[in-house]
Image 1 (spheres, rainbow, N blue to C red):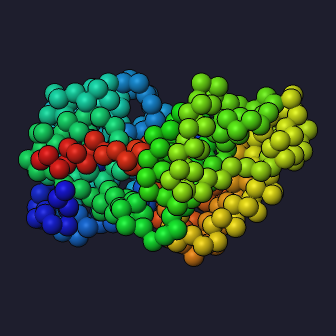
Image 2 (cartoon, rainbow, N blue to C red):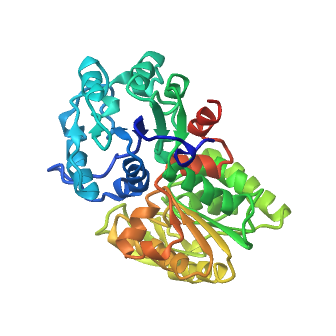
Image 3 (cartoon, one colour):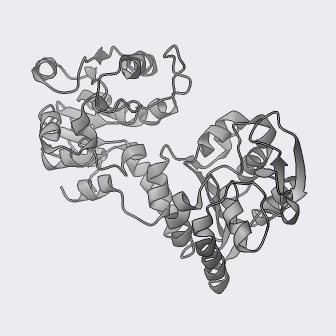
Length: 393
């Protein structure tokens, strides 16, 4: 896969696909610009090497229609501050007007195209739409790891029509860190998998059995595993159709000599409400009318001990309903345990990065991935469509 660093870009028009899908409040104020800051190395490199920058991104899910509240205009203002440069904000991402603006741009100029997903063709991986995007540039640069698992026009189809397609620094960095963790890790390698559903992490769990030394499971998905070993889980969320599969994963882990850790106690509530009655119970004693919403203190202690000798840690997904204060303690404890370990730590997806920022320990993690779905795709052992497309050019 060719990199922007090994490409002559001086005087060239670069269409740089990024992920500026940043969280905004109801007044369209950006509340976290991590994804903007993540691609600054690529943008600054292009500027330093006298390129013309045409930046493309999506925002939210407008479903192929223009939605003013999902405009990238607020991003243009923040990006201007981060780069200390004027940003031209386009009214669209394709068409004669955009082509005219691009034709008049000089080196050092920056154009931010409007939301790609205002056009349904983007998510349909439409060739004609991709051709119109490719027409704007001399070189296409993919620096949007977070959507590199998508078959979208600005991710996959465009590589067939751009004169040259290369990877940006963020995409390469994400892949390099994952390669370090999975291909030749320092051991013990521990995978921490949390979140809501076994079904969404099934591929990742099965692939992890080929690589890791220990697996820690938390979140609602742990309930399905607990039920597979005979625990009564009350009204806790469980995927009944995956109980047997969960049991087979536990069996395979044992056969492979992999230590598989499940909660030993949980924080339960009488209902799914932050103001509900709460108590901590062993997993064997969950009341029939209550539901598990977080791991308990004994489990947090157990998991901290499991991580003591870890040399590499990969974490995806929270340990409980961390959005509710009463059920955030297990996830925060895990975050602190991971941060304080002596391992190389890679965290991504399942809102795990949100937890780290909230706990104020982001700078103690080796690498925080910008991708959720893309990170999970790699955990499943699959290749990213974006990477395949870049390699095929």
